[in-house]
Image (cartoon, rainbow over all chains, first blue to last red; front, side, top):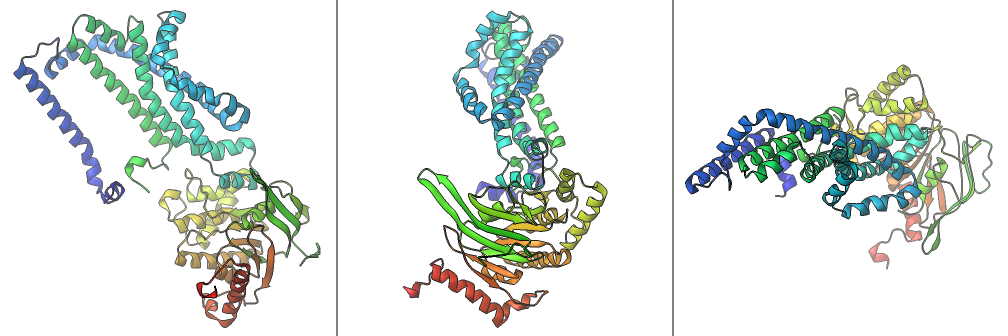
Amino acid sequence: MSAADMSSFKPASAIRLRVPYALLTLIALLIVWQVAVMVARLPDYLLPSPATIITSLYDLSGLLVYHTWITLVEVVLGFIVAFLVAVPLATLICYSKLFERSVYPLIVGSQTIPKVAIAPLLLAAFGYGLVPKVTIVALMAFFPMVINTVVGLRSVSQEMIYLSQSMGASPMQQFFRFRMPGALPSMFAGMKMASVLAVIGAIVAEFVGSNNGLGYVITVAGSNFRMDQQFAAIVVLSALGTVIFWIIGLIERRALPWHKPTQDGGH
Amino acid sequence: MLNSTRSGNFISIEGVSKTFPTRKGNVLALSQIDLGIKPGEFVSIVGPSGCGKSTLLMILAGLIPSSGGVVHVNGRDITAPSADIGIVFQRDVLLEWRTALENIVLQAEIRKMDKKAATERAMQLLDMVGLKGFENAFPHELSGGMRQRVSICRALLHEPPLVVMDEPFGALDALTRDQLQLDLLKMWQKSGMTVVFITHSISEAVFLSDRVVVMSPRPGRIEEIIDIDLPRPRRLSMRETPKFAGYAHQVTSIFKTLGVLREGDDE
């Protein structure tokens, strides 16, 4: 039986149980970790136990909230900048042959540049403030948004275009009634990918040069051999990433009630 | 047939040809098509895949330009996408983000028709095709047959004088297909519209039409036009009559002569 067959025969209760199962597995892993650290008597600067990490999470909570806020602002601003550039650009690429031929290959080609490597350049150019961080976040988030928007806008079928023409639709109507709504699922997929990359971008920027944000906390804790604090920051960071991802998913489900996400194993 | 007088004909296609540029030079897809269709007539075009019948339909709708010849519909030259038309494709081309009713009413929205009257008419059409109660269903909640019914309603909403259908039932199962043929004939008889219907199926063409246009393989030419003198309204039982079999045999023989159909023991 193939995977597709399995999913179509899966009762709804199995899907609901998936989350608790994952949670139980996580708890089991944490217990193994805790026991291993205790039995092997590992020092905290090598590998702190989950209990130690939870303690430092609690001790540092005020500080972590402040630095999370800094990182969150960088991520959100960079994400918005990327979106505002990516969507009009993708539309131009989709409508103009000239743009497609002159700009699109450069965008795709530019992805071979590791953006981590240009972070120091941007910091040198823009200083230690918010601007270089937002720029790096935007650069990271930009690519999946452009690509997925282009793919989405192009996914409209020839018949659909014919249909709109036979109705006498203007180019604007054709775009907003036929093309754009059909591109939204792909755009949301791009935004989810972008959200993950945006968080990475913010952390990298903070690593390279910053005096606040979660990346800064990790750097400082590392240089003080406070692995427990590093882990605490990482926990917060992954929670941040998860929440952003989840919020985009929530907006997607609200905005596209007609869309069946593929992981539901629909048609 | 060759000297079709323009008077009395709702559609007149004169000397229409179409060539497509390919890397190996121009390919002739349609060669010197002459066809006159009277108002309110139901005409089917049958032919093998690649004979250019869909191309002819798209030229008739003004959606692709011909390479030579003229097309008049209702006394007007067709040089641009015609808006006085309803189109149904093999794929239903429903907008996934709109409910069944919204998909049908889209036709009115684009044409800036009165929304309330359009909604009323859409509900009547849904009722006629047996989809009462499904008006608020999204396309992904409907079966293939139901989706195609919605797309037929959409094509008929604005009461177009001409409806062109490109293998609309080609992807449906036999029972659904029979039902939709009957529904279509009922709606056609009520409205007085002219229908140009493309199909692969000989029996479908004979069952539905006043005349069947038989086309040859590429380059597409009209091989023969057969008048179908079966009483209306058509009944499914007519398909078992000798007269029906005679028409089907006539079309089949043409395809055998053309080499489109080959029986093993002939050779």
